[in-house]
Structures are given as C-alpha cells and as structure tokens.
Length: 267
Image (tube, rainbow, N blue to C red; front, side, top):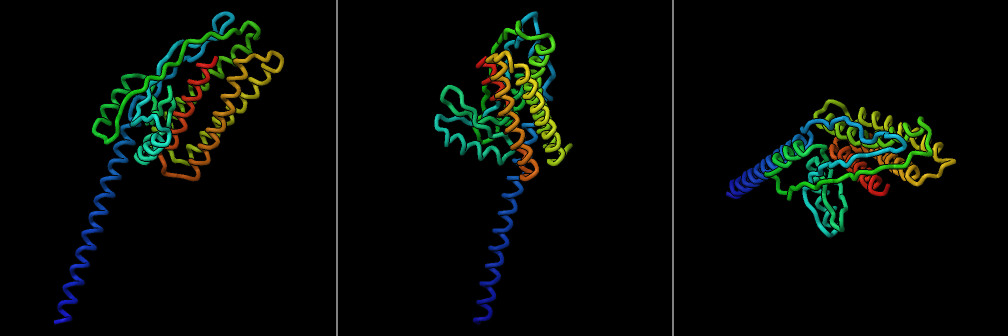
C-alpha cells in the first residue's frame, strides 16, 4: 500500500516536472521567435543611400538641411525609466539608445534615411508591446566660411564631414549584415577597427590644418571625431567580447548620428 502510494507521488512529480520543462521550452521558443522577428523587421529596410552630405561652393563649405528618422519604442521624462525600457528593447535586437531631446528621453530602435523605410519598420512593429513612434531628426542647413583655407584643405574639411555621415551608413549596413549572418562579429570588429584608423588619420589632418588658423568649427569637427573614435573603439571590444548581442552595432550607429546632429547644430 505504501509502496503504491509512493509510486503515485513519484509519477505525479515527474508529470509536473515534465509540464514545467515543456512550458519553459515553449516560452523560450516564443521569446526567440520574437527576437528574430524584431531583428528582421529592424534590419530589412533598404540600405542607406550614398549622397554628398557636405559640398564646397566658392569660399564656403555647405550642408543642406536633411531629415533622418528615428524609430522609437518608448519615451520618458525620467532618464532611468528610459534606460529600463532600453534594456528591454535591446534584448529584442533593437538599438536601445537613449536619445535626449528637449528634456525628453527617447528609446531609439534604429535610424533610417527615408520616411518610406521608416514607415515600413513602424508597420512591422505595430503588434509589439512597445509604444512605437517616429522622431524626426532635422539636421540644419549650415554654411562654413572657408575663405582662409586652401583648395586642398577645403576638400579635407568637406571629406571629414562626408565621412562622418558615411560612418552612420557603414554601421547601418553592418548591423543588417550581422543580423542576416552575412558577416560574423569578428569580421565586423575588423571592419570597425578600419573605421577607427580612418578617424585617427582625419583627426591628425584636421589638427594640422587648424594649427595656424585656430578655426572654431574645425576644432569642433576634430573633437567630434575624437569621441566617434572612442565609440568605435568600444564597439570593437563589444563585438569581440559580447558575441551574439546584435543590438550593439545599432546602438553605436545611433550614438554616432547623435554626435553628428549635435555637431551640425553647434557649427
């Protein structure tokens, strides 16, 4: 009698244990499917188009007004709450960068160069549990006085501004290639190391140009490159150390756009 009773208890425990394991497995599969879905949605827009961000006209270097579009997955006036949201969306493959604008903290999933791409992404995320919206990033029209610069130095300043923007494009495309398994994290790290080396060369060129001129806008561009080089350095480390965290390239990409945006506004 006791033996049979004990046997019944054991069977029930095994059944519960099995059901518990099955429930955990199903939850894991559903979570993984959601991560894959969001990563795919956030990375399937058309690749960023190449265009001349800055151009030379007579004795000026100009940037025309342009808009980029950030897909946000939450916002808050509380910075810590925004970072909590960012942690959640990062797990799902979104960039999760906390963008501060007018005392509001936006959790940015990714940034797109056209409203058409942006709307495609927003439509794809409409069934998520996050508050999905679009933040338009308006890069203002600027005109830099280049009358003191030689023809060659004007070209270097123009190229430095264009390279900043194309760094955003490069990381945007890299995020897609990592998400779609076209390149590995190690290959991505190697590419980013190359971008970082380019930044250091540009910093040296800008400082050489400005050694005798001491132009404020060249100093600001150079300082932005110093910070961008630090972003890329941290990204290389994360790519090599934290493999499989597919949000890290998007996060760095968004941070670089944030630096470009603040630089252009300050010129």
